[in-house]
Image 1 (cartoon, rainbow, N blue to C red):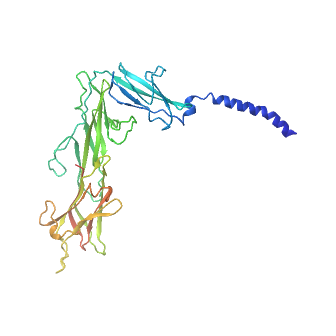
Image 2 (cartoon, helix red, strand yellow):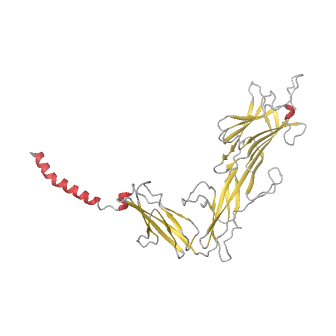
Length: 398
């Protein structure tokens, strides 16, 4: 009896709740009802330097869901009224200014809108000219003259490194100079200088991967730059709102040199190794591609502290270089080089000069040993400890 009475009491309450829920469902806004189903997305071309009277092509084809039957309504002047319909439309503005463009898409049940600001400038405004500059030193790490060109070139020179530091990880600062950029006319000035240091990423999400403001200013310092090849861009904007972009390549070569150190002898049946590590980049997509990495070894032919054993030729020194990639695969060595062939470079009669070279297009490519952290190994298989006059590792990007 009690359960029947409860059911009789609850029935009208449940009916009322169902009626209220149905009524509230009709009160939801279009955007609330459709946030996961329909999304308005549009682009326009040209995306910058738009002048009065110029045709602008608007395209809502990226709207979601892709492939659905959608309607497209465009408001070009923020008056709340639709000015045109269709997935792609063309519009122009007779007057300079900033205009909010709104696209509303609908699948018949749900709708969604996106708004973007379009800046329009006078038709007779003059474009600026960006000049990202260039710079090269008079000489390289060895004092040899350097050719200059339409690029930035610098060297990291560590010419007397301690064997306690066997890595090539030093960085440098690049002074970038856009002062030769031009505003476009005597009446115009440049209002912004934006330096984009990574042309592969669109950090500001405006659809242009070459105009990000990683650094700003007419002249800037790009700090902590590793050895490599970098494509960068300068975008300047003048007072009329017009912009122009200039790309330039920055090359950073690296030379590290260790002088007058010893390597122990092979007294236990195992060679003695000293490992030196260096980074190498071979990324054709970004343009950061090393040309070559070279190890240059110089040591005395005769061990001065050695007691010669007749017929054994045990005092004739022989040191070799080995190269290993980031997964410790051997990519090359100098061990097969005869004693009478060890005269690479500018070598005198008392020393052996041994070079080991790896090229970017072959050794560091994806089909061979790949780029990454490599190791240049100095190896002594002789019983005697030996004196090394010098070891140089060069990373050449230009």
